[in-house]
Length: 218
Image (cartoon, rainbow, N blue to C red; front, side):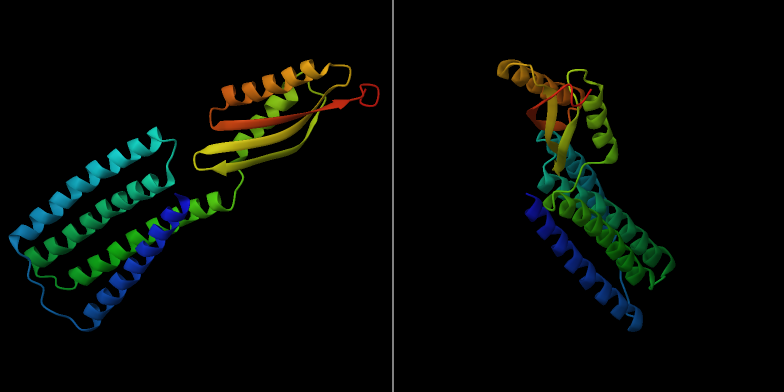
């Protein structure tokens, strides 16, 4: 899904470049733009469709745990909404005031909107593909849970990565070396469950248990 999202962003970027080239050409070589009444109907219909589809896709994305592809589509339609409003402003200036340069300027505005959307979505997708760490607040909350558990004598090798809207966690904890294997396993399981309960964004918490000598850590 993230690769699909990234490909979509490259396509948006190519569209953005094509729009800029054509808009600049019309600025250099001005032409006469005629605006028909049905142009307003089409643009207004596009605005309504963009609003409805964008909200629908955002809802479906959340329902599916933050699907990257659906989120990219939702962001795409959101940018289309602003682009349609820019087009509406452009054709209004042409139709009412015969301000011909408004058409290519609206095209450049559309390109900027699409380009900004492509860059932002590309940044998010790239972070996920590169296994970026979750935000500092999430990491701090995980560390606070580990440090506040009286059954733990410390921890190390804390690794967390973002997978879409989810966080995958792996950590090694130190427990009393006098505990039985079953007791140590129960502590690790309890820590994992607590992290996922208090931080719903963490959907997988693998806790490795290691015995520690209390005298050495007294």
